[in-house]
Image (cartoon, rainbow over all chains, first blue to last red; front, side, top):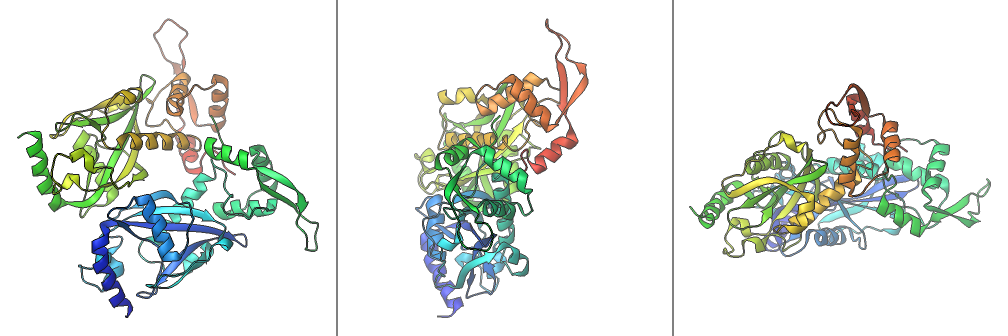
Length: 249
Length: 249
């Protein structure tokens, strides 16, 4: 079955199973080598990168749909996804399937709900589904040079913006860093999200004030330099900071 | 035409004009007498309060739809609305129209997009549309005692939660307070949004630090006590604080 036949077959099934006009797009951020990356997929049908999105079953809660979609399209499970925006421009999705006729389920107008998640990407090994040739981690810095379908660039930018806002009032890092990390690694994470360098001293003082870190007894071994101190998040204070926010009035 | 006939007639038109399965619900917050209130409507058909929501035209951007909906259902225009959440549980909307058969457009499953806005409610005089018997401002404190349809209580709570998070990293007040206001009035606004009392001294210091207020030369006249100082927002600093957020890393 070639990629066209595959999509036509899916269209017939989709009309039975899914609601028309509504889709969900997960933006999964990972952090590795001091850089952010996201999960993207590429279908056999077109050589364009896409978020691993999909449709909502007629009898399925929207929040359940996005979890199922991510599992089926990228092989990724146990990810906590949070809604961050809705993409509802009238012509956002139809062009992608322009060489099909208008009866194709996938070609109709879709309003898409964006969900994001933050993960330590070394723990997630994406697996492409049968309509895709690959599903993989792509560094944010590579995005300007790749061909992203539809408005998926805009969706990713909004997700990143949401993340930037979020770290001004919530702690971040729990799912993105390994259990034990160094202070410079935490700073690199914040810098990657904010897209700019931070002053080391200021950052150190601010983080200390929040009380969300625990300094461990051990140091990281190996390397020519002085062994750096290791930290982990203080579970209790981190959770409290998540609930209360970082800046109370 | 009774309320049932009205809804049946609307259903026929709606199938022509609107996308199925997607609706938008505006939560418009106003501030008056030191209290928050929201715009609610009540249809002839059922004696239950509702957000003044509606449907999305087949050839209309979602963001335009919610503006049109608010105008047509509540007579309110020139309101800046921001998306804050999506409500997609599978059985959220069908029960409301339970005494119609399933061919009614309004009775299908709807995934609804919540938008919120903040306004000085004395400047907005809501007008009910023809399917509604009233559209009016209801104080938040009255909500526990009124009968709200579907999951509209949950939508309002999520909007309020969003507002609470927002004031931890963005200035708020520009659309909610009159152009000239006293410091206690600003504090009352923050207290109304947060749902708790604030320490006057701490609040004063925090707000001063942000630099978003301009002290005016004039005082408010009238009243037996000392005339209170009047303030307005410093347009430039307020805009900058909106863009940068209140807490930079």
